[in-house]
Length: 498
Ligand SMILES: [Zn+2]
Image 1: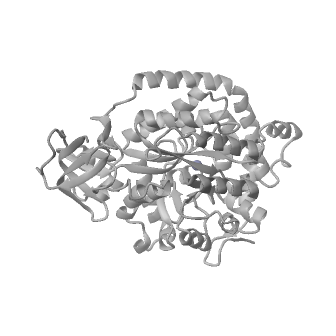
Image 2 (image 1 turned 45 degrees about the horizontal axis):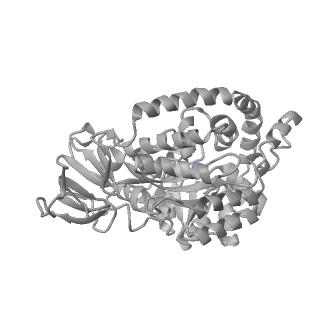
Image 3 (image 1 turned 90 degrees about the vertical axis):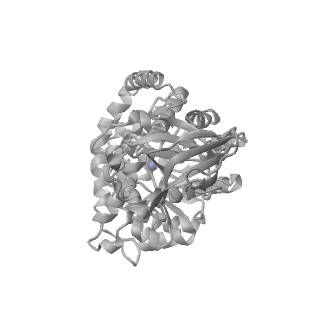
């Protein structure tokens, strides 16, 4: 057995709001003991100084997209629907190598910014393959990060999913978007099954899941098949639900009830189900999710960036929903900074109402970004806290950094002051993946060269897809806001369209 002891640091207990001096003894990949400074360690234990360091549990990103990292900064005024329209341009013509590269780039950014695990809804056109999913998983394994990788799938294109959108297009564009039709459901499900049948990764580190991307982008049969597959494989199910008003209105139009009520009727809600965003959930939706022990991955940065709205995290907590926090993909937020996501979660709650007593506290935001997200990933009880028996996923912040001068309140400052600038070292499963600001297992210079080469190649390969986006933007960009103008009330009687 290998032992490591972190000596001289201050160990953050988020729930208690304290950061006492303590030493952390690690056995292999697990925290064995948190003892008083100078406590005994087994002979041969490696000592690491954590003097002037605040040790906090690694942040857990409840919702991101590995494929988004090569597309950061490619758009500005994009609604969710315009982002989906831009997909062939910003994520088209990707090779398997690009898939690895984009995922690795995000993993590097996350670990450098104090995040040690993520839920990655990973997209591969036209359908998920064993090779593609294994490469995405390998990218996390090579950085040393934990991840849940969920192939993001559907059996209807965005254009087929939005009422009236194809009809609103001139004939030439209809022909073009017809080429974006997805393969039959059976082929997609077979791709997922093949990938997971021989999953070569340790599920404690890299675990699969299934992500029927947006309910009305999927037939009911397809959603049911995804849920059955997730149950059979004992993995999570994750979907973008009530993310935009267009989605909420479309749900009512297509199902005659909210997306969440429909998913509940299909019987797919449960403790392994995660709603991404949930901006337009009504009270009844939240009660259904809470009742099933489901999670919401709250992505406040993306929700503002895409104009989705301000999700009501307090109402979710009040109804027993497990709250996690995510960054969303770098193509819509446009970074992978969980400190920022946590800070925005706190701020968004504070602009939702004038009664401060309902605002999210920093403690609640920090718990959501650690234990809450960990539960959404299916890693509850193993990561998200610093205590004996938990994995040694530990971020060491430099208390000499201006973010921490002076140290007044560790939890308030973790959520409201820290921005990733003070991250000195990051340990995952007892292994240093960032050591004094240096990413240990990745050559950043080589990564930079490969990313820049991919950027140039993809810009040329997707020039035609970019032109297609430019032709579609006026159609999607007026049709969807038209749909969203429909009155839609969220109140205690439930969502309804008038
Ligand atoms: Zn997403």
